[in-house]
Image 1 (cartoon, rainbow, N blue to C red):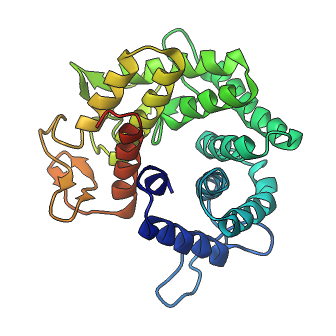
Image 2: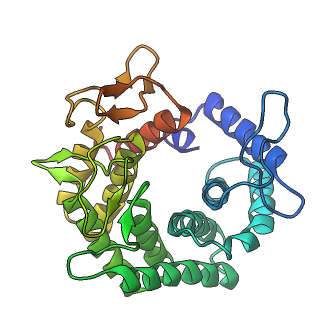
Length: 297
């Protein structure tokens, strides 16, 4: 859908429709979704994770707030409305952030829906509470550790502020994102939190494994924060994060397969992980399209 908004054409909207129908096929009668499907078309789980539902709400919200067909928007809204109640039991802060990203897209189309506004505040206030509970002078974060998709948390608060105009959301967004940036850059080289052990409060940040997802999250958050604040340094953060894909990283390794235009799965202590999973490639293109929309690439 982001590609279609920038470039138009039939192919991208055709693929988006296929993925939307896939979500319909993964939908459970109780309003939740499965997350895994085998080649034999049998579900491989009882119910999907919180993160998967959060991602689904984000995707559906974006569909509603897009130039997709009315038919697609109607289906996306039906799925969104029926699955949203289950999100209120989320315990994962990332799932809450994904839900906010979906809700704020939905709200752009239905600004008179006071229930959606309440839901945005519900999740944003919950993240603020977690931040106030865990953050200290030396640890400005929502949990006692940093794991994956970290930049989505402050990014979601930025979007919540845009929707309902709560200055505290913006304050915590900037505090936490700036702290995250301090811990992921060294000499203008992006060094994301490694997945081997995560980064725990009072501990040492693991260097490996570095995942493409983190660079993408930083790009998207930094661009929007820069647009909100008018500070050009956030554009530099976005560009330095994006250059991680092209070799401006600790291993001087390019993560883009220029033959297939896919993305390798990350950097390990032994070098490049040459697997090319869907998440790595999709998140790379999300970052690219964000920069393209802002005229930075």
